[in-house]
Length: 453
Ligand SMILES: *[C@@H]1O[C@H](CO)[C@@H](O)[C@H](O)[C@H]1NC(C)=O
Ligand SMILES: *[C@@H]1O[C@H](CO)[C@@H](O)[C@H](O)[C@H]1NC(C)=O
Ligand SMILES: *[C@@H]1O[C@H](CO)[C@@H](O)[C@H](O)[C@H]1NC(C)=O
Ligand SMILES: *[C@@H]1O[C@H](CO)[C@@H](O)[C@H](O)[C@H]1NC(C)=O
Ligand SMILES: *[C@@H]1O[C@H](CO)[C@@H](O)[C@H](O)[C@H]1NC(C)=O
Figure 1 (cartoon, rainbow, N blue to C red):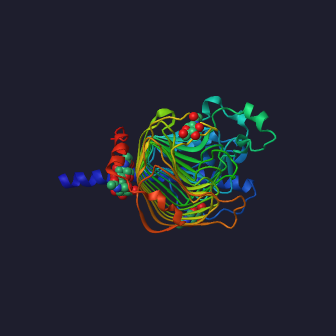
Figure 2: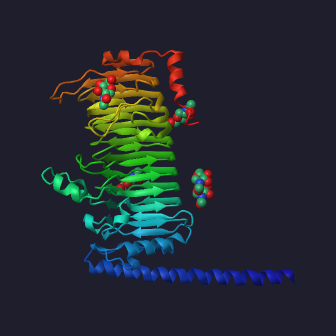
Figure 3: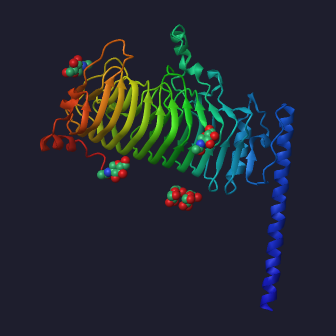
């Protein structure tokens, strides 16, 4: 009796599941047909055979996108996002061979696990500055409160930033007046966990290209980021208050830092990056306006830098508080880099900043196998006069002057920096950069390092 009852129950459940599945499959079919019609209309090549039906794919085309690169498709994107967000392993699809103009949007969680934004086509930001709402100038696409989320695909995210750069010298004054004080970052992640960005291209952002803020468990892999060498403040990847980050196997060339690591970051691993043009890979500027900065456990390795202003760099403002600890730059190949090794504790974005005592304390920095050619100065370690840099080690440094230099070289500079050297040092004059510090020096440095515990 009991057994017969369970058999009936099983049958009922089976029927229920089966009918649910077939409804989903039908829904998907309508979606696909719509998409194919659209493609025909645009005279595109015959579509590839439809992949297996997948009820978790939500194409932006099924939500009314015009896909002409001119009409505003942001509503379609947000609708597709909201639908995909509700299912496990949902996919928002931006199909290839189409362009979508997207106004500033927030794509937020919480969503069901393993959501994917599949970008195979092109997303375009509004090119005219006037069409950006004043309240929306901080970023173009804002991803927030996401977990286990991935952006991937062979497509391009284009910030169309040229109007924001005012690089044309003639119009500089006239246009600077009209420009808003804030410029948008292209893609920004906020308060997100276990997120991955892979394979896509991100180009021509008005400001920073890809930013992670208050996030943990970030992976960036096989991306291409590019903007002109003279586009101002167009950082490639910007990290802030984020931990457990891996950035790898990517090409980054912009008008500013390839990767910029800011306060609140720890356990960051950057490796196998081609960087240039740009300003190199930087920690900071830290400690602006006497603020507290804490950065630790950073490993940057296996990097190729070409034609960059700096190579491996740490920059802090005078008067800051906090510390930078346990940083390694290893196997950095430089060619025609102006200043390959830099610590600058007098960082200033104007012509002159007020002299102040106090500084973000820097300790435990390894420059290891920095190899290649420099254009201006091999090394520049300008540590704070009041807070020495300690345990700054130079290991196997082999830097040669570049044959492309046209204006003469500068001697390396080292001020108030203590550490040791291992292996060959070229140029040999760098030897005085590695004075051994006494316990007294370490105590001064430690006494400035209490705010990050
Ligand atoms: C995210 O994925 C990880 C690893 O696959 C898993 O352990 C974790 O539970 C997932 N978290 C959420 C909120 O889905
Ligand atoms: C992130 O991933 C790790 C390892 O895969 C997992 O242990 C953790 O629970 C995940 N965190 C969230 C918030 O999903
Ligand atoms: C890297 O991304 C490109 C698309 O931009 C893709 O074709 C290629 O297969 C990816 N490589 C790896 C190793 O994933
Ligand atoms: C220094 O940072 C690396 C990661 O970059 C980490 O593996 C290592 O454990 C850290 N060392 C200390 C003493 O915290
Ligand atoms: C700051 O101090 C340096 C070195 O003592 C000096 O050359 C420079 O003129 C000072 N700058 C200002 C703005 O006072």
